Image 1 (cartoon, one colour):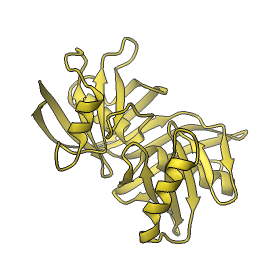
Image 2 (image 1 turned 120 degrees about the vertical axis):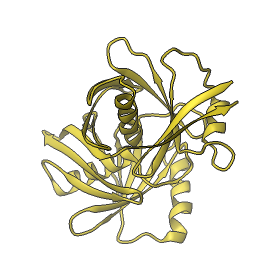
Image 3 (image 1 turned 45 degrees about the horizontal axis):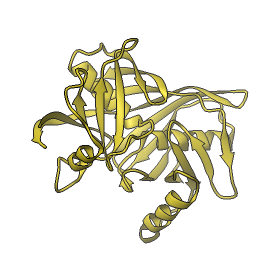
Length: 256
């Protein structure tokens, strides 16, 4: 089978995107894992299947690099928006479906996309961290510095043992005018250069802790800078938008 694909990245978080609106390609978990495997396949943090939607511009089906269906992916959503615009599936403003429901995207300038995220009405504060679900579950810990030798081992342990089904793990450092974040992603089972739902969760954790009523919060990931906009009303975070880069890298075809 020949699979035609394009590769995109959102602040270094990279994805293989396949247009499967005609459902002509059988994307099994084994095939997706092979495509995403670095050094042996194309290599990516995840894969996105664009499918037909009756009521919206398209359906975004997201898979983790291990081939399993994933939860919401913020950087992937922005990349899917650029893909859709480049291929005349939608205009610069669009509505699409994902596993967690409807999302809106707006390409505000070349390669910069704003993506709507769902309201968040539950933030769990623990002794030394927060737990927030922003479409994907995130363990958020504010730290003064990150020990490079300990971050990955600590994150791996938390990722597996914190809750049933696992969680993404984010360590966040505060700078003068922004946050710095490091994320260990479940499904990828490694640190990624950026995680959109994690960046959103970090911004909301800061807002919850410091009683911020609205954004933006500026966040620096290893792969680039992003912004999170929101409004807090009666302990509910609404009108949440994730803004950041989403860029086309290359296209190709693969025999499987």
